[in-house]
Image 1 (spheres, one colour):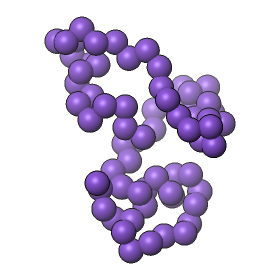
Image 2 (spheres, one colour):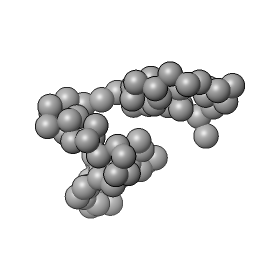
Image 3 (tube, helix red, strand yellow):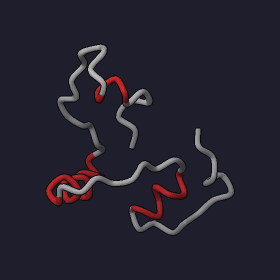
Image 4 (cartoon, one colour):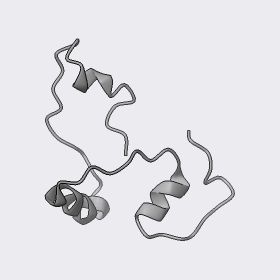
Length: 68
């Protein structure tokens, strides 16, 4: 889940933007809450195949390697 493609907006402070919160779909909320409560930082996910794998889904399609 991408917050902003230009993540540096939040980390280098040049634009003085502040990340206040996250939006997640209701069906993903419990998983997101578990990640937040554990305090762990998940690795970046670059395509739909990696996202499905991280969520425990295993129904793949021929388009799963696409990044956009």
